Image 1: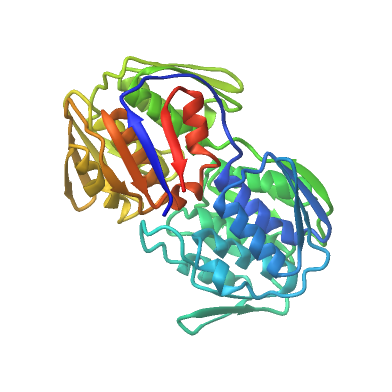
Image 2: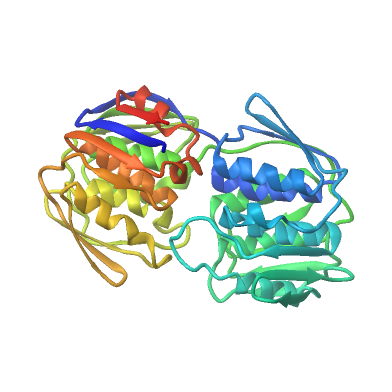
Length: 417
């Protein structure tokens, strides 16, 4: 069985390049289905979720191959609107193919998705929106069948902003008849990137990054080349790692604009951060101040995908911190593993109270989700002695090579198989 081994207690210093964004590239890969031609997608991360998405594209008839860090996707021979169950069960983001296949073929058959175990994440928002767009939805509890003679534009009102549902409606609406308005749309940077890609291919979308998005349906999308942005959550992970261990590091290929809430908290914790157009510099003493209140929230609030990493840093803060997880009910499942390091954490429903301790000791721990696994890596870097992290495939779902990146900063960490 593979695992990650860390000998902790070392400061992090140096430079690291930030990989392409996982959360941006996955919906863009699904969106290539709408292009009856070729997409060249640059700066694509070689992570498990991308490999699984490639498998879906190939299973439905697309031709996909790598050119260094660029991915070439030819969808001209797409021949089915059924997404194979074996790939859907591996990751939550497979649901994004619903909107894309509806837009391209007017039908889709897909099973309920798998992925991390951080919460229920129901897809009722997606299905209800499709029904408003002239789509018939049949759900037998295992498979979802969506069909229509023609997707039609509509006014879609979300009770709360949902990233996946917003993306799915955008994809279904791009080639639809008429105009679609999405109200209370999610505002994450990754949605803006999806819209930029689609517009580059000939779509007509306005309002990306705002809570109202308008899509005017077009007849076709043309071949396109697009560059995927750098991953803001990977960058946030490495910033918190340096904050936890102390040291000075430069993150290349990303600016601060998509990480404002994370950076604001890191500064409040006592770190110095300088922002450039395409770099972030952090300097940390490793002595962390507590944060009384952190609430996870949709963008531009504090991202739930950074909650686990921030918690790991706060377990050595000089006082008590409180985190309120408002997005996913199972985000605290890594807490028992952090306690193995010596952390003092009390969970009460959505609230986590973290009483800072002065010393963490390396431990034998188990990752159970992507970001929780990254949080365990940070705790292992902060702890004295040896840490072994099992189930590293959770981490590889979103990090191209977290061990190599952290070794570039001076960490003693390696992937063992």
